[in-house]
Each structure stands twice: as structure tokens, then as C-alpha cells.
Image (cartoon, rainbow, N blue to C red; front, side, top):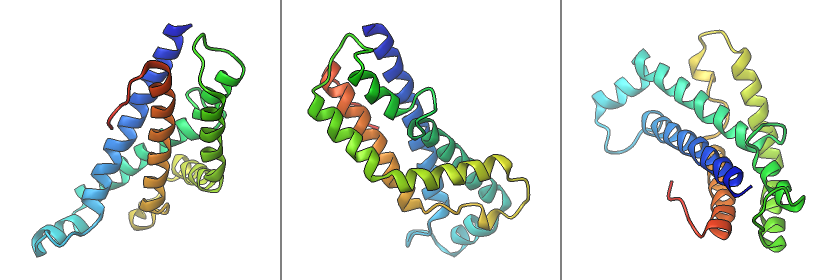
Length: 166
């Protein structure tokens, strides 16, 4: 059972890492910074390669977050937390910690629902209207990434006394 939990947490950490890394690429390419000179800003905004990269890394971010935040998914954080409540793991986590982490998920249920809607749209999305493709605020993605990291480290830290620095 310890091995099963360790494997699940390892898979969840890889999902978070992929979502986080993909999101970092999106932020870098999508957001204009004062450091960007005119040519760089122009290329980031109008070069089709960069638009293609933004859209695809954005898609990866959304899909990976949905794996963690939709309760029906195999590596859902909600299912992981419920597993401790149902004693599915040989390790235990303080019930106060579980309630706190479940409350965090519940507080973000509207964002999670919107994320799911965007994910469903992306699976069916076939046109080339790239400018309207990123319709979930980057700040909201960041909030959900932080949520996933906090839940992961809350469990991993309490059970194995290990914290992952994403």
C-alpha cells in the first residue's frame, strides 16, 4: 500500500511538473515584458511558430490541470484526499489536513468548472482562430497550479516528510 501511494504521488508530481513547465513557456511567450525590444515583441506576437507554441503549451497546461482537478480522473487530487478518508492507504494523514485541503478544492470549484469547460472546448476545437484560443485567464491557471502544488506538498510532506519544489 505504501508503494501504491508513493507511485500515485510520483505520477501526480510529474503531471504538476508538466503543467507548470508548459505554463512557464506560455507566460514567457504570451506576456510582453519591458525587457522585450520591438523586434522580439513583434516576433512573439506575430510569428506563427510562437503562436503555435503558445497554443500547444497552453493546451498541455489545461489538460494536465484537468487530470488533477476533475474528480472523475484517475489522478484526481479529490480522489486522493478521499482515499485517506476511506483508509485506502496504509499511511494516514491528519483529518484536519484532509479537511483543509478539501476546503481549498471546494473554494476553487468555480474555477475548476471553468477549466473543464475550456478543456472540453479544446478537445473539440478545430479552427485556426488562435487569438481567441486562450480564453482562460493566465492568472486563474496560476491559482490552480498553486492549489495543486499545495495539495500535493500537503500530502507528500505529511506522509513522507518530503516537499517538492516545482
